[in-house]
Image 1 (cartoon, one colour):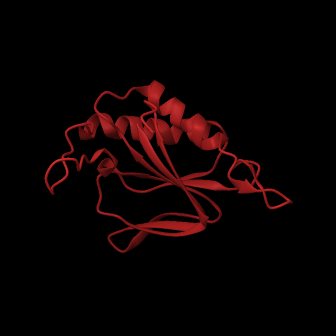
Image 2: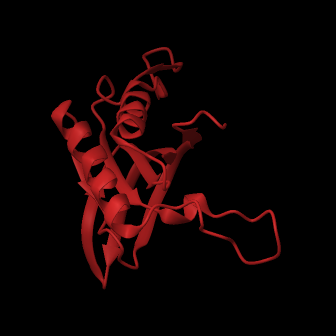
Length: 149
């Protein structure tokens, strides 16, 4: 699995003109599922995401995780994280999971984060979404459960 994690002061996702998820300070997490991914990959990404010490402490240093900072998550599915642009001009999505598997692991990721006590808002799986955010810092990090980067 892959994730793009952005520290935000606020973020929202809209589907068909209606807001389906909105957070204040916290993390916008764009999640992509690969065809070989399992729940172990999702567990790894949940732990990494929730344990990231990227929020400012009293001294202004990035030393707090999302729990300690009182933040929440907005988790949005994004199969394009598996887009391979190395050949030609059109991305290949051959390494992205089929929708049924992707949905199951995306929902598993969300549920595991919620079980750890964090407030989680979501987008709508397989919908055309408009995502708005104010990136705080900016702070943007990339994760891959296979540790490719």
